[in-house]
Image 1 (cartoon, rainbow, N blue to C red):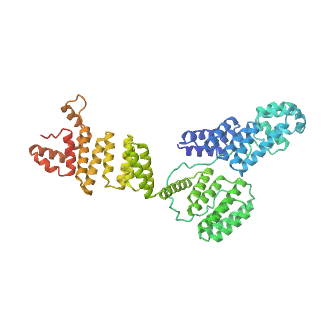
Image 2 (cartoon, rainbow, N blue to C red):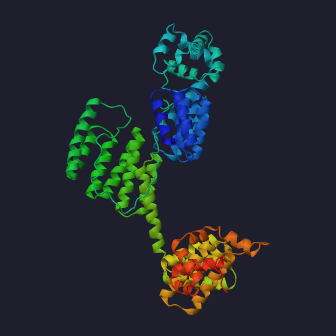
Length: 575
């Protein structure tokens, strides 16, 4: 199974409060993930916190912020674990760090408030003040009240905690020591005192959705041809809702969606505004921005999305909705052809929630921006300056600086084959033959008649002892030269290299007799293939009776290549 599948199972187990099972699934997801995923550690930390295993929760939370130190939610998770361990100073510092990254993070704001209250409550619980503080604890029905209080009902099922509370009632001075070993007592105390303090803060841990671990690429210039319809079932914010207001707002939104589909964007925008005024859910703002986007009013759409993000932060809205707002801003900047800002907001969206669509747009936009930057750098005059500089370095034997100069030439004029061919020559001097071959291939692709690139490629293959590939390259060079001008000197150079490659290919080993060498050559795949060719068998039989006929057959270029190989292997002998 993939990391994403294990993570989905962990999320489902968490929702069902099967925390040990969720931990197991998240652990498998962490092991299966190709790269460290901060959300998986965050989710497992939430599970440990739910089981009050705060040390494990803290360990995972710290790993989460180590992987992604710019994620405010990770520091919220650290703070919750520190809070559970009773280290309120550390919790306060972690919440402050979250707010440095994201000043509007309402969970961190509320958590900081609660951590400060807990710290103050713990300070007032010193031995000297304990008797006064617990004058409220003499209620004979205290245990029963704690067992039905939503904040303490679950933990009061533990007989050990019940016994500690009874002990606290009879001897208030004893709670100071017990409170350090069992942080649940702090929740009990603050509940009795009426302090709105939860443990862990922020309504307990929640898992974080993330990552459809998919990867693909699209051309950034492709735009959706179909209308981007706002989803009628988008998730609402996490705020408590007035059912009648929500129902009325959703009814208005449905009317707006119908107008949107009819491309009546102004009317749709008016109704989305009305829905927002009726009930505060940033889904309506996101839909309004979609209408403004389709209308072509990208600045208005950006402004609306920024408002949705700001309002969503304050209302603790689902981060998926905030991610959509960021992604829509990115799409607006894409339409405005502002690629740097598009990239910026796609990245912000992915920080909130990763989706394949946003990831694809980010990568395509980055690719397009890189392409444009490269195109803006093109300057043929400066390319020629770099070529001459590279030639000067080459002649001095300064190969590294020659490579640097030729690389600059390629950037300035990537369509000039000479840049790649010249750099290949310098690379070969440094014995970087695979890189030299790649440069030669690019030069040949740009200019199939550039014979020097073929020859440099063949020499690199010869140095790598790839004789078969070397002769193939040289025959390509010979064919290209025959079509281009058939320069006798160039043809002789190519044929000389062919003979050199063949002689090295079919060279007897040290101490090996000629006859033994020929027997070994007959096992070479290239030779075996030729000897098994029926046409070549017929030609060879004919040549035995009439050697002069072989010359006639060699006028065929393909037959010529095969006969040359057999001659080099000693299978055809000339007198």
